[in-house]
Amino acid sequence: MKFSSPKREVRGAHRRRARMIPIGILAAAGVLGGSLAVFNSQDNATANEAFPQASHTATPDTTPSGRPSAPAPKATTSGNSKIDRYEAEIHRLVNKARAEHGCAPLHRDPRMDKAARLHSQDMAAHSHYSHTSTDGKGPKERMEAQGYQDASAENIDAWPTTPQGAFDAWMDSPGHRANILGCKSKGTGIGVALGGKHRAYWTQDFGYK
Image (cartoon, rainbow, N blue to C red):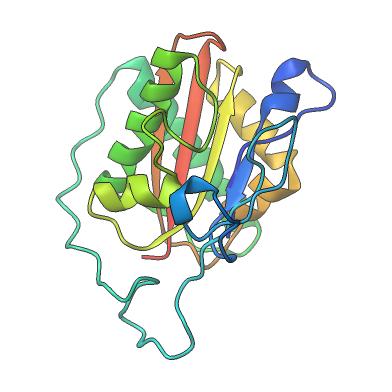
């Protein structure tokens, strides 16, 4: 599974800013404060990070860290704001693509929704574009901070101002596409923030549960 943000070659500078991060490879020294991660440079940006689902000795109901996730809070009803509609449309597009490739639909988890929204808002507020938030936390840490212990991946994007544009950019990037079509992921969180240097910021988190 991957944490990702797409690299765009054809449609402007935003394609070069995109990044992806898979969760599950061993830590690169000094990166993300010791998180399990490997990073590849993409225009001096984080490009790739991976976290394992579980060790081969783990029981099926344990998480990568050996701690079960706390019970998910009850999902709130989606609102009717533009942000709510954009998040719902990303969810629809992703599940449509997954169905076409034989993967079960992702359910939205309120904990991952909150992690994704806060990250998009952080990027917009600080004109910052990275899987590492301005407080130094990576995707896995941000999801765990909201009580979700089973992180598998993250996609981020900046610049497209419509859900279709962000989705198309992800699907045009092998790493992001792999996250979207990763059948091992079961849950997702989606966060959109409008404004900031790049006009719109998109985060989709993925989890194994």
